[in-house]
Image (cartoon, rainbow, N blue to C red; front, side, top):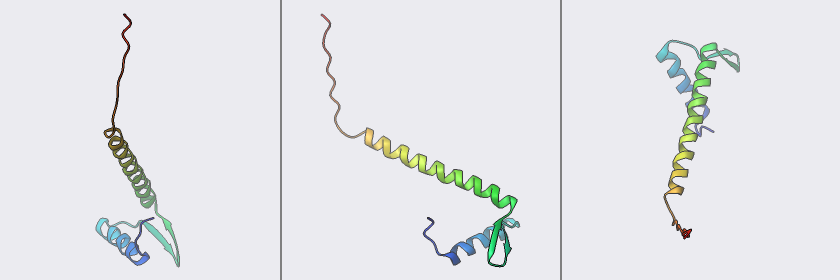
Length: 78
């Protein structure tokens, strides 16, 4: 979930299309479809979000590992 309104998203897509001089979507009335470049950009973006989630999980795991108490005991074989 992006937590932004549809008009905000539409505006951001329009800005990207204008900035890079390419269409991300083909519009057919109320229906839209990704262009080839849009599909490629979506694939890369999806990977970026997945990596962000992996980093967040890694950092949360590291925080969990650095807190607490560790007791070590060993018996002498002699």
